[in-house]
Length: 391
Image (tube, rainbow, N blue to C red; front, side, top):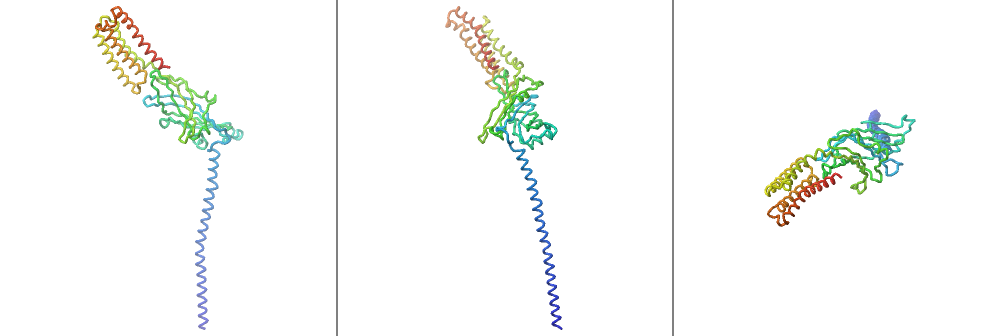
């Protein structure tokens, strides 16, 4: 009986151990199943969606819209037109000018063509922020204004997409442009205020600037354009190219606003005192016969000091003018005339030396010749200088 009972107890213990082991194994398998299920979900849900949905769409968008247009002649011609609405300021000392312009760029991208019957219109128009956002999804020739002095004061975008794939991009902006002025002919100067366009992203093998008759007709100066101290003349375009750091050549076009300075406000400040400074001692030396040598020399000494003061005044009023300017050339011509008159006064007009040049009749004829030849020669020389500066 004991053995049987002992055997039953052992069998019960073995059965309990087996059941406990099975239960423990089942509990261990449940967490493992949860982990292996979570990983496939993350792999099959997140990664495949990102790979098959997001990336292909972005890639197809970039290739179809952002990339360089296909099936177009190379180089692609970008049409340029410009309207100058206003010029508010020309800063001569800073070498800048501020203008309000409309810059129009056009090109063709066959990928943007659409069916007129399906869309219902033959052109799509976008304005302001809508145009800026739309441009971000399109390929553009990356045309930039390279002589901007600072960020534009105002900028508005306009965009037109036509059924045949033509793109017309209009930039209306108010900005300050860098433009060094050539002041050698001041105040008779004519300046070319330049707006410089480049496309440094595409070489001339890919993109060039051009103009059709429609671009030329569209371009010009506004009839309401007025600029204090200047007279706007016309608008000219000059195409060129520049060499990039990589050795390739890139397209460039300059729109030049031709303006002529109104010199009437500047001439009296120089020529009236200049004429008096040279005229009065000339009259005293050559035309007043009762004047002695000391009075003649004194009159020219005073003339030299006065002309020197005029040159200082000129430097203060026009600090940006250099020695090559016509005003300074006229001043130096005046100093040369004064030196010549001092020499003539000390020799021909000096009674102690007149015998060297001949008898009194020869001296009288020589003085009569100098009375009209010297002033006339100065006037002719100055007139020639002024006329050459106006050309």
